[in-house]
Image (cartoon, rainbow, N blue to C red; front, side, top):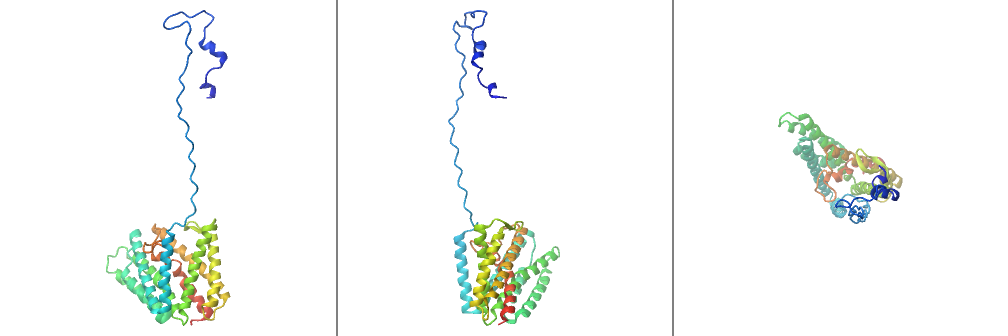
Amino acid sequence: MNDSSWGAPARGDYAAAWGPSDQGPAPAGPAYDAHPAEQTRPMPIVPPEEPMPTPPPSPKKRAGRNLRAAIGVGVGLGVVIIASLFIWKAAFIGVITVAVVVGLWELTSRLEERKGIRAPLVPLAVGGAAMVVAGYVRGAEGAWVAMALTALAVLVWRMTEPPEGYLKDVTAGVFAAFYVPFLATFVAMMLAADDGAQRVLTFLLLTVVSDTGAYAVGWRFGRHKLAPRISPGKTREGLGGAVAFAMAAGAVCMEFLVHDGTWWQGLLLGLAVAASATLGDLGESMIKRDLGIKDMGTLLPGHGGIMDRLDSLLPTAPVVWLLLVLFVGTG
């Protein structure tokens, strides 16, 4: 239909449609007047058009977490770690042990809640604590022995329950024993060196700087996704920031903190830390996606749980320990 279908007829046709014809005047009467009134059609009442609402400005990019709480918790943890690290090494071993036990509790709790997997926490917690202490006192040999005994304890402990689900429970238990306490043992092994406090501080600084560089550069310049199916927030630009920040920090730390270290070793160490920290972060993201959760816990406001802070530290610990041994020896 066009516009003329709804409009009034043209002026030339109006008289033919409504005016007098050639047959003479219309008869008078109630139906016809001598002067017929103009035929009108009431105009529809159209409400005044309201102005279109102005669209709100696009929100600025946000980090997605309570930044103030995250900074406060991070500073508090840093004070505890640094104080225990340089005042009394045994206290720092206690910090590692507490982190391991809480991390195991978070991991096993989420496995049971989301997948119905009952990895036995008691032998894992006891064996995990023993692993950390054995690694500090006896080195790699002690850590491996404690790991084997912990796996055996998980197998035996689970036998006290019905056999349904035995295989998946003990498999998850052995995985948890390796993933959390065994990898954390390498931090204790770093601490056992004469300059152990400086080595551990280098390890912590490089991992934190790598994460910070990835966050800062990725948040500001990130355009190309690194692994969208695993962690959509991570970008290739963020990975570049992690590498650059970690290599710079590694050069400084190896030159001024680690005995007999050189700046070029720090560049290699920083590169390795950026790679292992990113892979560790992606690995835990894979676990959380499989479980259908965002965070492993809520213990640390602004951060999530303990495991959400250990994700990049745990796989980085053996990498740093090995490279430091190759570069400057066991100390």
